[in-house]
Image (cartoon, rainbow over all chains, first blue to last red; front, side, top):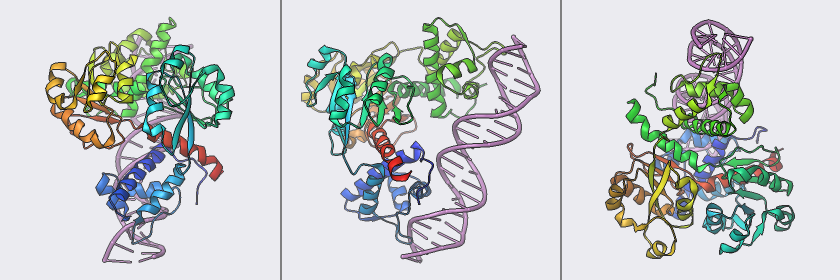
Length: 213
Length: 213
DNA sequence: GATTGTGAATAGATTCACAGCT
DNA sequence: AGCTGTGAATCTATTCACAATC
């Protein structure tokens, strides 16, 4: 019985973790497991696994546990990973081209089908599988590319305008690597991933013990 | 009055956000602000700003607010961003070389001073400022490079062994992009950033409304 | 008068513990 | 007998509201 409230990102991100654990088990030829089994093998919390799954229905068999392949399939379906998602990368700089080349973005699940960049030099220089268009073409190209997800790897100063262009063009969701909080439209959710913030967290932790212990 | 418990990553990450807001204000020539002013301008929570800061001391003046430059400086110091942090990248693939070239990792605060890779072809192919060494040299090179932070951009299967090598070599913290939870040593904290998990979160959100509204 | 710093209140996430199935 | 699914209990994070202070 699904509920109305959207599940928290924390929960959804853990589903991805569980999925990876199940794939691992499957590769190892294990066809049956339990919340406790997963928890000990992968250092997770058994009750949290059960609670997380409970938000989306019933997945196990009492007294037995979970069938690995079945649960893996159902999680893939739940996360929407049982079909291809076409993505575009906006910003053909270092990070954008790296993502466009990476296996995770050239998989059955996620495919970068094109890039966009303002800078004509960047459009010609990169040696990629995918075409690189001028950013002005976002509005025209996104519908014909049938892209669902936009990946923003532009400088902070260009992030908002490119988000807006992607939203206008009908993109359904955006992964934003620019270090800038975007003014979001409700129909086009954004996930911002700011790598320097993670570096800064580490820098903080380096100093914490010394200064305060 | 600093306390013994380490602050949560949520709090520390928000300090990074606040710092960026302050830099923005400084560039705009604003030299005075308040928690409410920051909150409305940057869509934050005023009480959360005050609570976050309160964990680390007193930063403001009652009835007045905060001096922008002063608070900016104190946050930089608190986060350890008032000095250079030397980093190495392990894994000279797409993402690793992209990071090594990116401005955030060639700044006064964070500098990638070298890369490591197993694969001799990758070591020669990349055209970078920084030297690329064989991963076997991690133990020897880290001390002479005086690197503090290791950035792991290797495949999942190689992540643990390279983390261990970095830890043995005396690295102080690791930013891990490999989609693998690492067995961590208490003295070498790890922050794992799994980009595909964020894509999967978006994929989930694409399906959520349609299936359940 | 204005705004901080903070204890109290609320909301959210995790863990516990056990009833209910298989 | 064993393990899920779940309400209750705990822990953590956020927001509220106001006394303290400039």
